Amino acid sequence: MRRMIYFFLSQAAFCAGAYAQGQEGLPGRGSPQALPDISVTGVIDGHISDDNGDADRNKLEFREIETAFQDYLYPEIKADVFLALHKHDAGYDGEICEAKVSFLRLAPGLSAEAGKVTVEFGKLNKSHSHTRAMIDQPAALTNFLGEHAFNPQGAALKYLLPLPFYAQLQGGAWQGNKHDHPVDGESTAEVLDTDLNTVSVVLAPGESGEFFPADKIYTGRFNTAFQLSAGTELEIGTSFLSGKGAHFEEHKDRMKLAGADITLKLWPSAYRRLTLQGEYFHLARSVPAGELKRDGLYVLADYRLSRYWELGARFDYAENAFPAVTFERDYSLIVTRRLTETTSVRAQYKYRDLSGDKANEGWLQLVFGLGPHTHELE
Image (cartoon, rainbow, N blue to C red; front, side, top):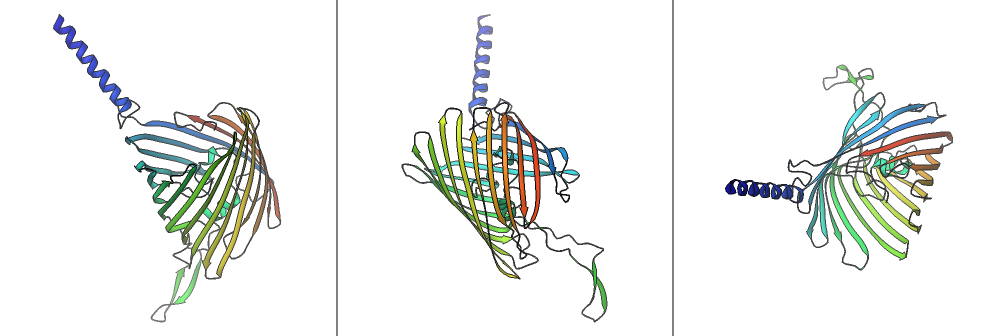
């Protein structure tokens, strides 16, 4: 009997040690079965507009669902995979938002990330859309980086400078997707071949209205933050991008994009916070029509009244990236009611002026999160 009791006690101790190793050792900190942290974020949007050309107006739709799989592969090496379904026209398109491995400490102050990464260009591009203090994306980001977040394949190195305040320098090398130019069988032209015979060829449609970086892309960023006083913080950053435009295979299409951002945060009390944030972008693009110089910016004021209510206002100015220049000016008002730390309801009104074409738009959005990857209040 004594041997049997000793046997069971030793087995129990072994199992307890194995479980603790599964909890603290890596991989598999979540359980002995080596399961990663799994989370789901959902976004439901209602959108109204008096713009008759807006295909999404007067609809209530499940706009986006994002799943997250996260865990440590090894001490100070972490994997994050974010998969999403986005509503596009009449259906849903699957997308890998991010799939990266982060090396948190290669050397003192030095870290890296590799894979499909949402690049830290400015302040807003890095954050997922449902974590922002607004429903739509500022026009400057859409015109210069694309309709969705700029998230190419590649790697970045980050160095935390040994200074008495926060200051980080980083650089990345990436491979971006080009724009697809599908052909239209109904659009043809009669031309002569090398034997001087007349043949019919299919023409590609005109250039798309969307612009984004593509092919080999190089990025750099420097940002620093200071505590100006108790309850006041200032962050300043600059970003740079060099590469090709999305139509580089069809056109001479090279681009450089520079950006500057500033964020001031004040905490009058524990549950109140004022955020003043702005970003400026300057695009230089080479196309057959010549050298294009375009500018864009946004300014955001966001005030958290309490742990539940938040008010915001935003101004946008953006020129487009194409030879036929357009100017967009937007004025937005935003109200957010936080039901829990992971669930919120947000309403937004926007007055848009696109080169004289004016429109009023409104959104009502519900964002909810399930699991450990949830976007809590800052």
